[in-house]
Length: 186
Ligand code: 4NP
Image (cartoon, rainbow, N blue to C red; front, side, top):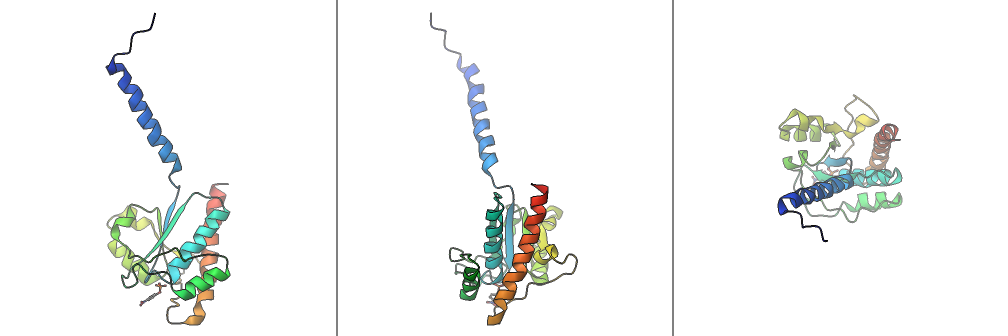
């Protein structure tokens, strides 16, 4: 004899369980750390920082998200500076998909870490932070190679010869950060 259909009031909990299961599965695929690199124009330094960090996390097989922005609006929508593209390309990193955008205070909730490239950017970003939780996300990127020294990544915009040095500084800082994380997540 066929069993009687469950009353709809008993079927609802299964629906709800399925929805919770879907949400939980989605949660598992959310990248574990979201990092934003911030400089002034978002065409020279932070695109390099984004590309380098993406390469490091790919090598480490970390499921992270990396993005970049600039505190200024002048270059919004543009590709990275040609000199950054060339320098990154010499190290096997492609920046051509990146497009500049201006830093907005709304991103404090979206990212776990906000790495700033110099102390002026640090001041400008902190001025936009509303809470201690937001402020705690902001760090000078070179604090990972020279803690407490307030070192700046020099702006190479007006100096054609500065891009490789900037690349090397960022490469060391990103490597130091990823190695520390690798120790915590072996
Ligand atoms: P970035 O360099 O902050 O490393 O992207 C600059 C790019 C553009 C300008 C300044 C710095 N600018 O004045 O247009």
